[in-house]
Length: 80
Image 1 (cartoon, rainbow, N blue to C red):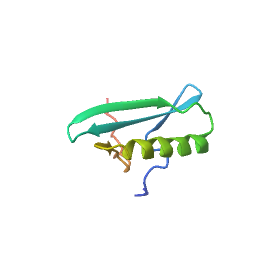
Image 2 (spheres, one colour):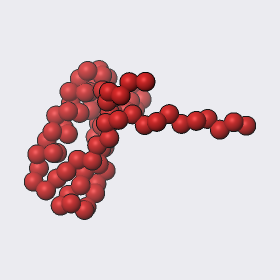
Image 3 (cartoon, helix red, strand yellow):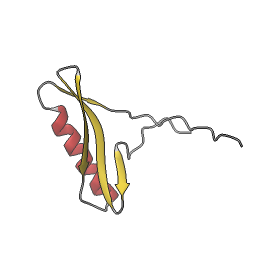
């Protein structure tokens, strides 16, 4: 298993259009979940738009992004 970050972090395909979702922390304690449509079906374009949006949020005064770049450990299936 690779330890590299998932290139599609914070992206999900909702029907046929990509969306971005991440958490923003304002002033060190207020949190807001951000979910925005990227209005594209193209994965490469979605990645570029995600990166631009996250960059813009991170540059706002008093704003910090909470991001997870490592893949979650695989869950074991419950045996029945």
